[in-house]
Image 1 (cartoon, rainbow, N blue to C red):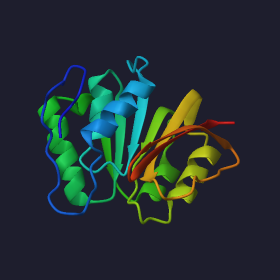
Image 2 (image 1 turned 90 degrees about the horizontal axis):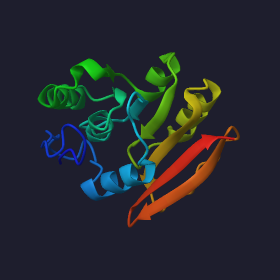
Image 3 (image 1 turned 135 degrees about the vertical axis):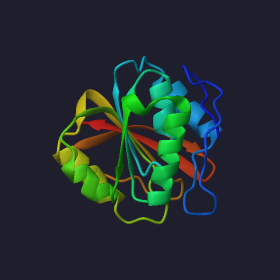
Length: 178
């Protein structure tokens, strides 16, 4: 896994061994950032269920500031190692907590929120609802949800589905405020 573009382009990132996380592939990451393509300079990026942190680090490499939320202590250690390697510690914050508990405690709005929960989870609907009810998106901000392509789209009254992109077993769904 590597940083695709920006100031840390080509940097290989540390990953977790085993099946504890399911990293977003470089192909999917590249497609996501081609879709959002606009200038990320100064944008606030939230990476929920961060794993190794590669998505948030990609955003930082392209100019954003990022907050990472990850429940696994081992994964948070990998995120910290990757932030040190890329020299992005000053433009990031890592929260080691359950995603829903961490999101409920947030007080900052974000321009882009990326959520990559375990595919078998049951909390994504509640997480999206919490983000909407707490008004965690800036005006014009959006959410990207990575999920199993076989799962139904989650409907949240306050959010509209702008688009979805399917890659075999993975689907990325883009949400914004209605």
